[in-house]
Amino acid sequence: MTDDRDPANLTGSYALGAVDDAELADFEAHLAHSQQARDEVTELMDTAVLLGLAVEPVQASAGLKQSILDQLDAHPQQPAAESPASPALAKARARWFTRPATALAAVAAAIALFVTGGVITTSLQQNSFAQQQADAMAAISGADDAQRATVDLADGGTATLVWSNELLSSALIVDGLAPLPADRTYELWYINDAGARPAGTFGVSAAGSTWRVLDGAMHAGDAVGVTVEPRGGSQTPTTDPVIVIASA
Amino acid sequence: MLDLVPGDHDVSDPVDETPASRLQGLLERVGRGDRAAFGALYDEMAPRVLGLVTRLLRDPSQSEEVTQEIFLEIWQSAPRFDPNKGGAATWILTMTHRRAVDRVRASQASRDRDLKIGIRDLDAGYDHVAESVEVRIEHERVGKAMARLTDMQRQAITLSYYGGYSNSEVAELLSVPIGTIKTRIRDGMIRLRDELGVAS
View 1 (cartoon, each protein chain N blue to C red):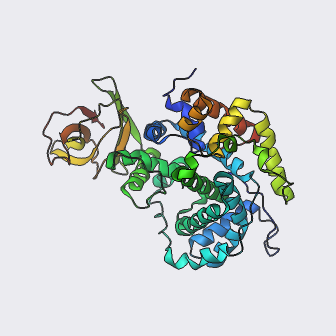
View 2: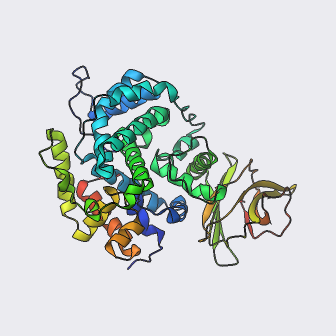
View 3: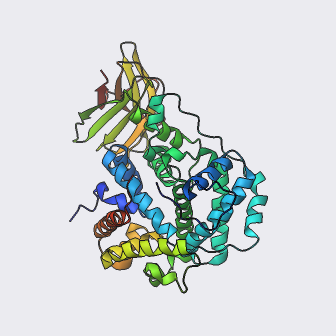
């Protein structure tokens, strides 16, 4: 019998849109660092589409098409996604991360944890913070020069830094990091000889796993640190770091 | 990547064009603001979209309303469709299912949905032979694959995909631990994938 809470067991449910909201964020965190899970989800989503195509078609009433056409003017099209800036970025836009609709919406839901503490179940907000995060994560993970380093946390969890010097960016994936009280937040820092530069804040779910692309440009050789700060973050660290990962 | 089995379509199409590439071409034109292409895409896909939505929502007028929302979303987000990431039919059907599930879970009526609706067999919706041969073949292929699942797997997958129930709802409906439901669904979907020859 598989563990009830083992995210690896959720690939089929995810493909069917059946993962409960409360579990979606943790499953997305799992997807973010499991290529095997991403591959399985992609195949099972394609399988689910066959279930959809097997349903008997239904003819719409005569006026539906015109009704839709009449509303196009009131529904402007979204701008196309910017074209990939480099082969690394093109490769980064790998199938899973940039799959439209559910996969990306679910990634957005994972990240919404940081922003609202809730879960997005409606359609994806284009150009949202969440989508920028998902796009950036995809770019880093797929970069030709992507590297990663993992450290163990004091409480038994792990933190993994994924970075690309070519893209000047990095993302932190944490698993087993303790949730904080409402008036505190985790804050990310790029650290080098010149000091610590703030790189965004994040919270974690009850299960302690999530991920976040850092704000700002990473300089080659920067270390990445995480401190606990008052809600809203600080300009300079006010506590000792709970995580430090060197990128060189 | 999935091919869409076509309905009747324009004789003006190049003969060597596959249904999938034709659909993809349409969607790409829609992404550039081509309203004629949008009309053609609607003609091709509306019965599929409405069929799936109706399967989940049952109510005809609500299903048409959701179908309208879906096509407006297709229009709005088509510029972001990238064929390198998956087929046009997959893009549209995935969006369709997500929208239908959102609606079914949001409506109060859905909370009272009869379990019997959810656990109907795949075949149960068919009172007559599907109109086109292509659809019937597709249906039979999936039906055969579904028949290879255990009853438990088929029930869990049917409730989830065609009923729009979440894992915890399925677990409650069937009085089975949620972990068991997840396992049945995953094992069943992997079996379906293999039976249907889906590979990425």
